[in-house]
Amino acid sequence: MVQDKENEAVPAEGTQAKSKKQLKKEAKDSAKAAKKDRKSQVAETQPPADDYSVGKYGNTPMIQSKEHVQRHYVHVKDLDPESAGKTVWIRGRLHTSRAIGKQCFVLIRQQQYTVQAILAVNDAISKPMVKFASNISKESIVDVEAEVSTVASKIEKCTQKDVELQVKQIWVISSAKPQLPLQIEDAARPITEEEVEGPNIAVNQDTRLDNRVLDLRTPANQAIFRLEAGVCRLFRDILTDKGFVEIHTPKIISAASEGGANVFTVSYFKGSAYLAQSPQLYKQMAIAADFDRVFTVGAVFRAEDSNTHRHLTEFVGLDLEMAFKHHYHEVLDVIGQTFTDMFRGLQEKYSAEIAAVAKQYPVEPFVFLDPPLRLEFSEARALLKEAGVDLGEEDDLSTPDEKLLGRLVKAKFDTDFYILDKYPLAVRPFYTMPDPNNPKTSNSYDMFMRGEEILSGAQRIHDPEYLTERAKVHGVDIEKIAAYIESFRYGCPPHAGGGIGMERVVMLYLGLDNIRKTSMFPRDPKRITP
Image 1 (cartoon, rainbow, N blue to C red):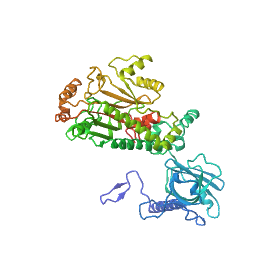
Image 2: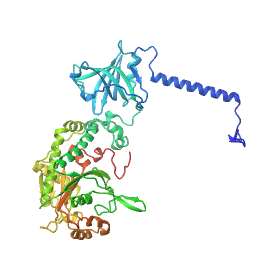
Image 3: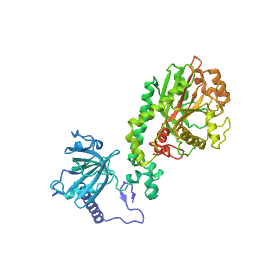
Image 4: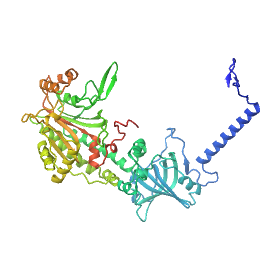
């Protein structure tokens, strides 16, 4: 069709105009189809008119906070034999459903907790109600009113093994698509079963990460990120009790934090800036400002094209810095004790989460010494030499070296956590204090869990002239760190600290094989979504 001068529709060239009769028929057919579609939708969402369970099941209207509903909900984890005989409301996800004759068995999941619910045709529960329940799509959110009852034999497939729910009402609050990109049961399957039963059962890593919202619903993932929250909480609480002050540092900076090239450049009005590789310089400035002991929890960015099991381009840094009186080992002692306190706190407060993860990813429990084992780099070099690896005096540890050293330390000292002190000066950043007793070593240290580095730290240079000298040796543009150097010209106490990768700590504590399992929405060189 085209428009004439009066803007009326006229037939386009090569077409014929439809008659008024044809147009009327098309409009009538369209109205009939719409009416049929509405009837179909009503039939799907409303029970039959002669159903005696009307008002006990169905799809609720979208919740738009129209009114307050006075209803007390019970969490699935709180259902136990003492609840028997009580009528409760539960809101959870329909994990699975199974219809057998005139009964339907439904598993309701709330976070990592599950309970079995039963609908059976009787004087109160109609056959259409049972059918409705059996047709609810997996992962839909439902409200269930039910009476709690005890069971004769434990229900092994549920976390609540000693009780089940006799359903009185079931309402769909939010319906999930019938076709899911992954099945929660498959994503939650123990890794040993995946290996035995083959690739058709396993859910690969990319599928998990592409559909992270679904993947995060598995019991293991629910536990991982609750334990991860526990790591941050313990880190904060332990250090606060030791007199530390939490600070917040800028993530947009004018020069590379580490003096290297692995930084993300961002446009900043008419110029450029960088995403912080570390809060290092600002922690030091806080010490120079007389805060004495500080820590920070925040995002750290590394533009390293490392597609490995332990590297991310964005991760959460747990950083701390502390002034000391005479020797940087005063700080090293505090950091070591912080870790042992944290490990003990996880064992005591998050044992259920650790067990839930181990159920899917079996691993030996994490072991540590108190006080923690401390070795000098030269001792580590000697251990490696005995195992056939010969390191140069100024060589750093490679990843295979670290893993081998971890196995050697575990075999000799029975610990998964240890501190390695006195690193070669040549492999440390410009602000690291050299060892006054050996020009080739430094007052720096790393800490390891299961043979992988989780903290890097050192005594920092607090003298501005010496700091300038060392920066020049490393090729750092002095103009770009002028404000940093200037902050030490007004007197600064000797200090030391370190930076910890939170996701790596959780990965290694739980014995997981990939850091993407402990990053809720991981960022690496090949992934910036979801």
